Length: 275
Image (cartoon, rainbow, N blue to C red; front, top):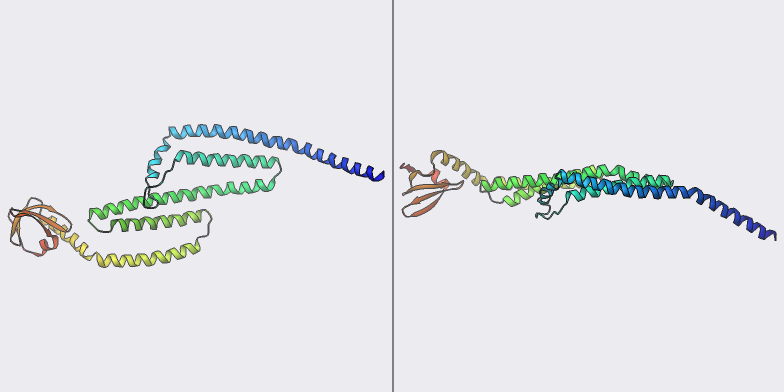
């Protein structure tokens, strides 16, 4: 009988303790639920207002510029700036309200880890901004170099412009990883060695292979200062009117037809100007 009474007392004490703990925990649970519901309402309102503000500010005009950037050699980006901003804000507010709810429930570990994640977000966003800036600068430099090479009638404009694009993107990607807190020492050392060797070989190749091109450009510069389109000249027994002066050739219209004369022949031969 005494054993039964002892069991009864232990059971009652356990139930009483559980009841007290539940009674103490219930307000905290209720408070955390209220905070989460309030947070859900606040997030909906904030996102609604923010979306209206972003549309009034015409932030969506950035979509064309960002989606026009080349990432893999083709314009394959499909980014909606407003959705990206709203997504970041939504998850930021969700994490904030989760921290508050965890603090109410005395879940210190969860609160601490979510807080660490929030502290890391600025680094992540700045790293992402650096990466996007790298793609923007890379595309700008690539298009500029391609237009320059095409205007000078240089060959290999696509290869050279793409090379500069990838060098800039790689450099900015490493910078973004550093900003995000990633140790890039090994990556930097290897890429520096590879890029240095490649650029040296490229510079030697361009230097040796472009001597004739540079010479033609100088000859064309001299020719344009001496002759103009419309001049009537005699060169190598051919008399005609100059129709065009290019970087590497001169077009001469004669009674026998149109001749394209290499610019080096124009400079090296005797030319008579008729008019």
